[in-house]
Length: 115
Length: 113
Image (cartoon, rainbow over all chains, first blue to last red):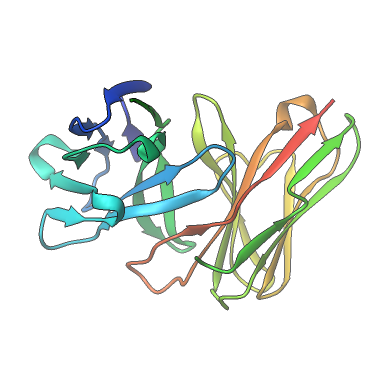
């Protein structure tokens, strides 16, 4: 069965500092991978996704993620964090079944940005 | 943003009461999903639908039922609410065409007393 691990429950960074959020997945086939962001009281917004091809994917708000098959990882990065990036971030692995593209989510990483 | 609305947005109910949550989409997407979000668990799939009247169970389906009589509406029913069903419920939609993305609604916060 597929699974996603986000080892960092909370991360605090200073505004302007770089950011890396870790995500490791377990899945027997080639995964579809996603990062979503959730602001307090809001729904989930898609940041970026990987289906195939270039292993470095660009997303919205200046985020990028790199798929590393050998490490089963899909870490999210941003070179310079803004205070508005404070939110919870979820990594998810997608897999095709008869019921469409199902997602398994990690437990999330809460990002705090210090001014 | 994908055209997804959820109603109600907030609800307080008592144990043993039936509750129905509604998800409405304007995108004409084939697939619709219900998730629950709980601290320390991320989002977990409750039920999903791959067409009108076509539904299937997800990871945490016990105590929940769903119905989809129209493409645009997907209902989640708690037949007899329990305190363990206190959660935030999210609806999602996708096209069902292969390499697809799920888009999420704003959520419904449910408190069962």
